Image (cartoon, rainbow, N blue to C red; front, top):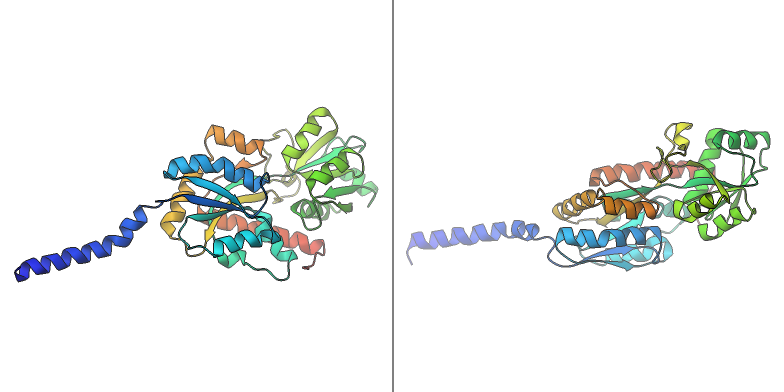
Length: 324
């Protein structure tokens, strides 16, 4: 082998070596992807993950499966993500409260949402609806506000628990309107909504799937939504933002990755989700679950999470909530 042949062989080897990472990056994904959910099966993030899994797998050419890791305010799911490589093959599907409310109420966090995760895509926004039972003499939001101002503290509202997004929404509404209502916490909407129907509390903020059956039967009256605009789930109902500029307590449902995940993997998943949530069949499934589909870039999700955290932090301060 002459010197020229040796030189060309070395150059070819070097070129292949340099192109290796690019070629590897272009093969993502080359194996199944896991969507980790920090809640039990049947909850909203779990439902969203399962709606996404099949079409996302078809788009990526790999199986996508869901794994539930409930417990400790998301810490179990976070630990799962922290224990695997940052390669885009394990992603987190969660809601805004895990990232914004839980850190406010927990003194010793095992994860830092701001530094341990990176944004991938905002799947959608999950609005809460304000409903009253039939004994409350208010047929619309204006009448409810007038009633609350006439009798400070006489009206009460149920929530899914102290510090829940349901609680913080109500406190933010009360502060904005200058009204006082008594908070009655329950262990989840599965208890607060029946309590409202049974007359134990006057009203609740809750997700559409848990309410609409009672609204249709006439057992509850729908007055407003906590999203920044009217929800397609009930377009006839006003958004609180129509009376309180900037009011937005519909929580985010998002996909996150471990910090250090390659940008190409994040971009690929984000782009596919943005397309998937615009499909009519997926829109229908998400809306049945109580989610208004969005789809976003990682940068847009980062801004949505930052804004959500600021709003709930302000509301938690007004409610005088303390970490435990």
